[in-house]
Image (tube, rainbow, N blue to C red; front, side, top):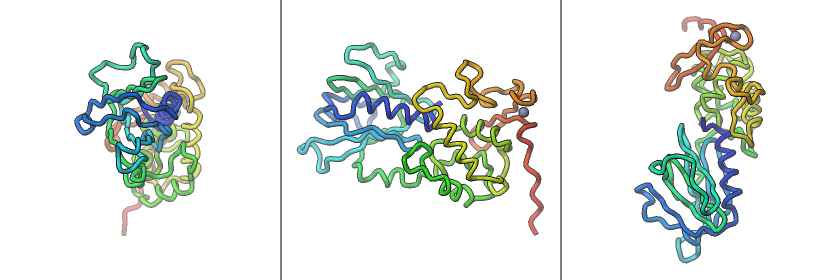
Length: 273
Ligand SMILES: [Zn+2]
């Protein structure tokens, strides 16, 4: 599942394949960019911010009024970028899912089922991404600011607040479920009743950082199939700590997994007034 670490890894793959190279061709298969041709454009770098991918490009002087541009994409649930050697067979996904192909002399980058694919002046990145909270895997990660943003809406459940990228950027459903298990917190706990928000966001950062540089997402320390999570994807299986059957239920727009024993429900709040 593409969460902050997967997006970070993807950005690195694209950086290694394309950075400091001049594109020899592009093929956009989305209506808004159908006539865009990036031939002759230079790739400066590939970066990520939260779950957003930013491929930064320099346009040839005659091609555009400004030279610094960013090709933005978002993987959401199902998107992917793959890099291939020229002439190598594209094995990533079915061809009808291809949204863009970028060619350089040394590599071909293929974007599958990308969302929010857009070309914008790099100067406008802030307008697009300025709402995001601190990036868990960014150089400017700021746990105090993430905790402050979470605390600003104390009535929201912690399960929903952690997925809101305006609070902190990079946590998806897998890390949310695993983090709450490790902290012994019910997903329905109001943010205002979480005893140590700073400790919670710090652990989130550690979980994502531990999976940088590999595609297997593990929160248990094990990379063996079926052993990589405590609760996520384990409905009705025994809790690894206490043996209770792991529960699964909808929370907001997403499902959540938790152990009803290790993560007891929050105490009812006293009625107002
Ligand atoms: Zn348990």
